[in-house]
Length: 201
Image (cartoon, rainbow, N blue to C red; front, side, top):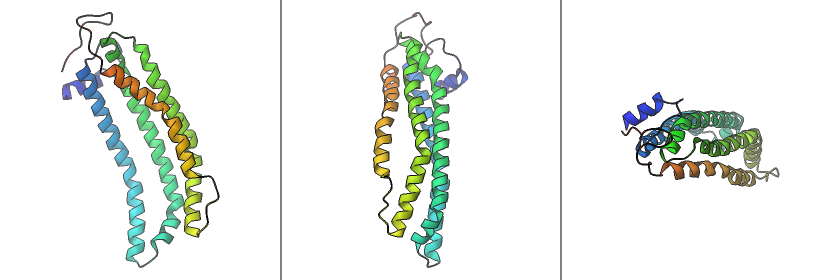
């Protein structure tokens, strides 16, 4: 497994040649774990900040709701930052996967241009999510504040916005399906138009 990951990292910019299924999927597993760990590290400050405010308010005998209301603006700002970092990490992980996926396509006997399908769908998802970051933050802040004030929060419904984002976010899943579908195909036996058989780890 480690040899497959080292090989893929050493060949980040090389689209020529072929990658076996094992090499490709070990590398994908590595990228998924990497993305999860980075996402966890980015999320920790938000959760620590929230729980610190609640625990401090409770320990001092204050109302945790009042303390939470005071930190909402900061919380929404942190969530925006987390979303931006998550998008950047997603772009970097996607770029790290391109060459390996092209070599996997070659190994199954397909053109590397198929990589444009997952790239286009992921680009759409990221751009769409980015355009909604500020709007979502404003709606969250308005509804959270309204909830503490006892108001009904007559602004836009955050659940309707999430549903809209979720539906359009499904476009990104097309790319995942393409990667999985072509990633599981069997290697072509012997040499093909893209080179000799793949190195196996």
